[in-house]
Image 1 (cartoon, rainbow, N blue to C red):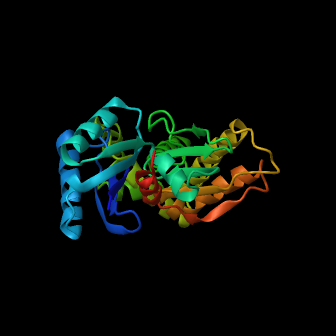
Image 2 (cartoon, rainbow, N blue to C red):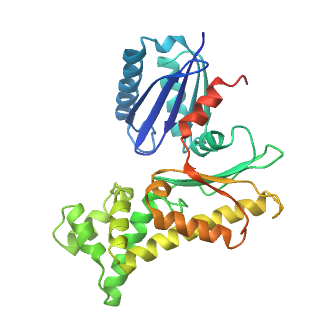
Image 3 (tube, helix red, strand yellow):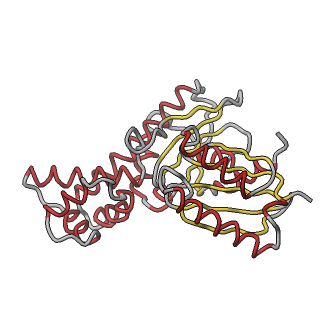
Length: 301
């Protein structure tokens, strides 16, 4: 009997599942093992802890694993890929398959079939597979270059909008909310903290922005609306690049903490897409990317 290991390696956490050919045996979660988000020692400690938990729960050694599939953002970045390959070669037997995190989520929703997957968590990405099996993506270039609709960009854009409001003489509850969350006592302290190197984790502010928007703050609401619009624009671009007929459109699925939990972003995304493609179907479910990674790990390549 073969054993298969699947991972969804995100920017703040990593989810693992160990399975045989027909059923899941154990799931665990660790801190991130993505080297763009953690140093080597921290990533290794997180990985070792998770693998030890899987073995403890199942009695199965990592040397019995036949194939591992890891889905991660930055799958084309040498720092990420080289570390993962070395780390798993040292710890886990069998073949290693490395793909993008959006690709495993796409496979979870549409295993090997046409469809579009929109991902927005710490980062964001959009992927689509046409009827010819070709995979195309839009976005996903990282926090400095894209990541529309992501937690990182929501937090950063909210801070920028807050300081523009200050310059314009407008009030926003975001200022006090962020000062309280980061335990800072002045605007000057916030300026210093936000501009520090290394940068603070702006993605943690996304829930603060959502709460302020729920309480009617127009600055926070405008940020969420714009990020959903921008993410929807990427979906429209991808649909055009797939050269789909408006009469035969692929379904859309979504995943990630932002689209799951922050309704205004999801609503703006849907409105932006259906404005151009009114008949498209958006599945009312949250995709579990680990299912896609496990499907690939089990698949005979």
